[in-house]
Length: 169
Image (cartoon, rainbow, N blue to C red; front, side):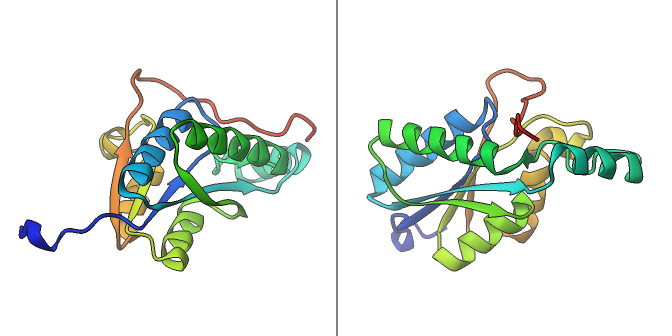
């Protein structure tokens, strides 16, 4: 690889979901943005279904197809608020904190495209299959679709990382 063609990142996009891995992931993205004097764009994708609608969806489909997604605007707002605070602690310039009602992969890919980001920072939790254990389901999908650099932040401890949901339902 010819290192003379490498440039600093100008736009860094990071996804957050309010889980225990979100803080370290945003901190890493903020550090990168600060060191490259880049804009930081934080994205939280969420599902707009209420708890009642979610329960009906699970009962109808026979399983929760959206496990790990942020459920509701309140949970997304809280996740974004915490992410912006983490970024500020790292000294990064947050140019946008976006709450997007969409699945996480589409929200992140569209944001990267729209903002012309050069790097996307993701947290990857451990899941069931071998590939998913290496990258996580969202990270696997992003790697297949993104046309930018991807930095994957892994949890320090293996195991499930709970994602918050609206208490109000």
